[in-house]
Amino acid sequence: MREIKFRAWDKEKKKMLPVEEISFSRFPYISSYIYDRKKDMRILYEVEFENIELMQYTGRKDKNNKEIYEGYIMLTPGGQYLPVVLDDLIYGDGKFHAIDIKNCEIAGSIYENPELMEK
Picture: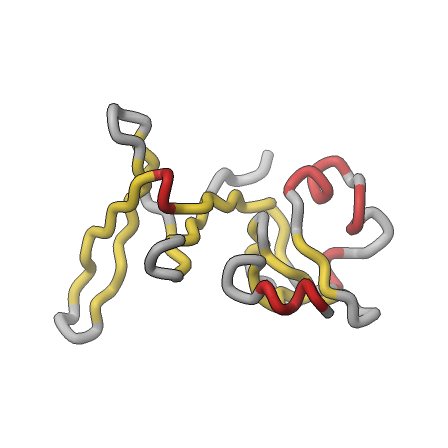
């Protein structure tokens, strides 16, 4: 069974956040702790769902042993840039069906590096 984890892209601040907690209360939000180097402490950071893109961990790792999340862009051994779609990896359909994901490496994400999808 794969581990269930998430990351979130903050659309307003244009930054990737680790997800510590997801709330489905009256005002749905994700919470994250961000390390503030200036204050040398962790700061609670909360963002409402409407302001984020939630990315789920696929349960797989790239050739550098980094966790692959939905929405990442992978560089294949053949030099192609392919976006990660969770169902492709879980069910073996689509772009990664014939490619061993362990030989690919994370090149970025569709949110941080959309220009990679033009290549």
